[in-house]
Length: 410
Image 1: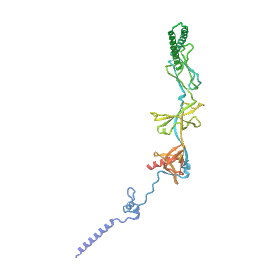
Image 2 (image 1 turned 90 degrees about the vertical axis):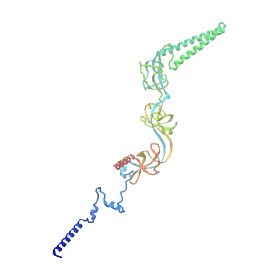
Image 3 (image 1 turned 90 degrees about the horizontal axis):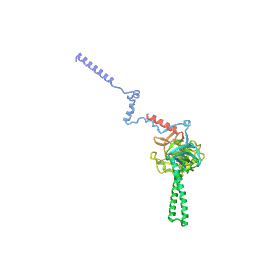
Image 4 (image 1 turned 180 degrees about the vertical axis):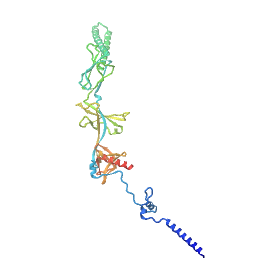
């Protein structure tokens, strides 16, 4: 081997060594702990966790999910929020059915006085709201028809007097044998007809409340109070032309009034005649006690409600027709094993809940409610006797619960 060959071989070995070194330099080395710890994809996920799961190894446990129906609240916060805590317990409940109502005049002691015939209102002797006595003059009306009826009555009475005289004379003549029997019979028939005509004329005047006038032809008629009462309606004025049966005024005896409440059809089974009732009226300082005197047999077509009526004494006249009222119909008292304060029951997502006291604060507990008297409410299911709960201020907890749900949704 000559020198040229030796140099060529040496050069080739050098090139091969250089290529090997270059290949070794480009191969990645094992990552260090710091590099691995800082490796994350573009979404922020650590590759170590995925590799651990793929290889069967467990990653770190997820954080526990917070109870969405719980509200964390310390003793100081509870006191500041005005929340009172009590325990569910047995109680006597007299169920109340709370109904809107209105004071009305007793229709059985109210009279609407109308014009007996077409005419002119001569004078109005009382004012609306005035107290009147039985027989007191109220309205004077002039009517030509009244004059005609009085004239008919006077004529009938005159014919009756003549028939009576004729009959007496024919009776005497027949007894003396001077006149025939048929003359007496004709006089008797005429007397009967005159009596009937006179009675009919008087009955017409009486039916219309028209007294017979002294001269028999007066057109003036006076309408009088049928009993002691109050003028509750007076739609006419002096000088007004009125027709037959036109309403002139209404007199009501307000010593008793009706309080009529609207009862939903679904609640009618709870209402019966004679059951106790308590009536609240804004103008009265205390509740008035009475009983149901009437329950309507049909429902209103538009309201789908029936009428429950309570009759109340009103000797001092403080109860006035048209006043708004509230009626509480009282059911039979019952001993209930589990009850809570009525204000403690809240509605969340169309469910009744009570906020139960826990070591960390409160928890919304679903319950099924039963009877209530406005102060205590029966818990049929969902709560045991002795369970501590938020008896006052539960609306604060409901608001906090709603706030927490809204934040969770976002």
